[in-house]
Image (cartoon, rainbow, N blue to C red):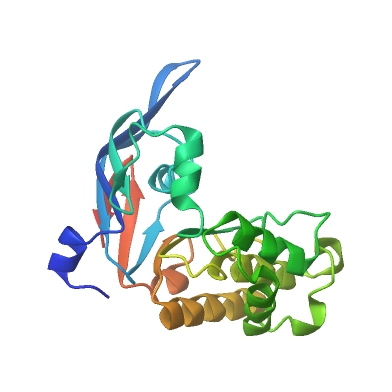
Length: 232
C-alpha cells in the first residue's frame, strides 16, 4: 500500500465533492452527497454498503463510465469533467481494467478471443494472441482457451474476465461484486486469484462488495451510508 503522501500526490483515482442525483416520481433523489476519495498506486480499497446504497453508481463515476451531477473525478491524473465518452474510453484503454458480477464476456468469442480483444483495443496490440494465452494460463484455463462462454462454468467465466482485465497490465482495476454470482468455494478461489495478480502486477484495486471477509483483504475499507463515504 502507498504512503499517505503518495496517496495525496500520486493518486490514480481521485474524487472531490462528488454528487449524483436523479429525478424520480417523488422528486429529486440524492444518491451520492459530496464524496471524497483518493486511491494510491497498488492500493486496494473496498467500498461496502447496503444494497441500493449507490456503490455501483460510485464505481461507475470513478471509472468514467458515467458523469456526476457535481464535483470532480480525476482518473490517471486526468480530469474527466470535460472529456466526452470517446475520449474517456481512450483514456481507460489498456490502463484501466474491469471485473463485473455478470462476467460481461462476448458470447460469440472464445475465451482466447475475449482476452485478445481487450489487448487489441488497448495499448498493447502487438502479440495479442501470445499475451492472451499467457493471461489465461495464469488463471488456470490453458485447456479451455477455445471454449465459448456458454461452454464454461461461472467460475471459469469469471477467470476469463480476470485474465481479460489483467492482460494489458492495467494501472487500476475496478471490480463490482466480483464474486456475487459464484458459490462460496468458487468465490474464494476467484478472490485469491484476483489478489495474487494484483500483487504480482502492482495494480491498484477499487472494489465494490458486500462481503466483509473479502473487504478485509483490502488495505482500506470505506462504507457508503446515506450517500456519504465513511472510513471504517
